[in-house]
Image 1 (cartoon, rainbow, N blue to C red):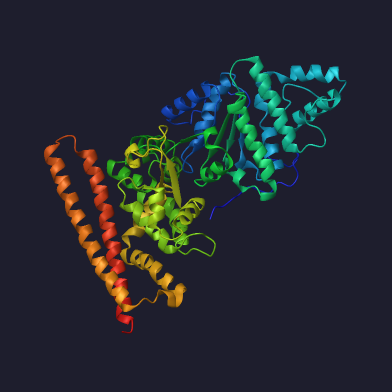
Image 2: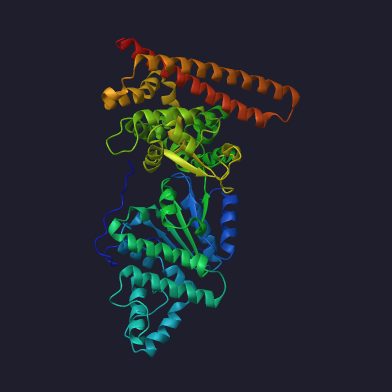
Length: 532
């Protein structure tokens, strides 16, 4: 369900590779269009001011502003003469070693310009009698070629004709990083934006990809030569990366959406630049509540909302949420190989909507989805229907309380605020949800054949057991209600957090009660149809 728009790259040469947009040039000041993110920028700058020790992984929802944050900070760092290589995998096909190597080579101009490497190359070219054009703008594949020629003439163990393009580029980066380290001053920063393209390499290129990841780790943890940042909006990327790289070598942080207050300020700022003169005045408290319910604090969704506003918020919000609605309804009719069933997605929707923080612990949700639950969760993450969050002090859009004291656990959320809004709409369609949740049992019965037909005595005993379970569950509900009342009486002013946890427990108990009643009804129907 993920759509890629990158065009194919057939030959790794400058004539066919679209430039990977390194952040270079005479940048005088940060982009004036950038909004907020003061805390995130401070934390990111603090990370870059320390000695490299791990590869930094920046994750977050699509259109949350990760790339804008990174680019804005890089512009500021460039003013401070920090050497930078920025590679955006959206702009060319980098799902092959040659494609990624070409992007890395194109991004090297920010490193060589800051280092003044052309002075060193000019001397080397002269010493070895090589005919090459060397100047301040030397970068990319030209740089690879020049250093390769120097290495060949000097008989050095550097890139040669027998090595792949990726090996040549990696060796050039090693040399540049080491030169910067010897020179002193700010260390280089290498950014791979939308790094999830690495997970799309074919199995035939697995060895080359491992070499590239080892280079990233060596440059940071082992040699402390440079900072490496892998940014992504793919929620399944972390699962893949953990299988490829030792988790001790990774520092994972999340860039969330804007908070409630920041989101409104951001939208007000955007509305002032629209063609609607009174648009910002139309943003009342009531209208912002309506907008936030659909868009949350997602920068991309709020920008789209501002652009589509034409005197009324309702039609604009319908357009903003249209794609999420279509994707969700498509996901409710999964095809063979998608990895989940309609019943599993419906159960996930119900669990998220019932949660106070609209987030459920990953392992807990997998259990709720039944057989194949873990695979279903991962497949829905890959399809960007569900989202993944780990606790990070960098993000303020999901409170620490959502982790329930287990900050090392992973939470599952909706992929975006618009997806969550459409999930709430679906969840309100009770008859449709009940039908999909019940389909799990009927599908299992249909595919299992005679094996599902149990003796009448066994089914009658199951009914007795379900009755006992319901009695115990309702007793627990009563206990929770009594505990809530006692806390509110005995801990005035200090009961909110504990009561919040109890209410979440109560919500889950109610959900369990509903599912148990549904199962009991299905069993009764099966019992009535069974011959005695």
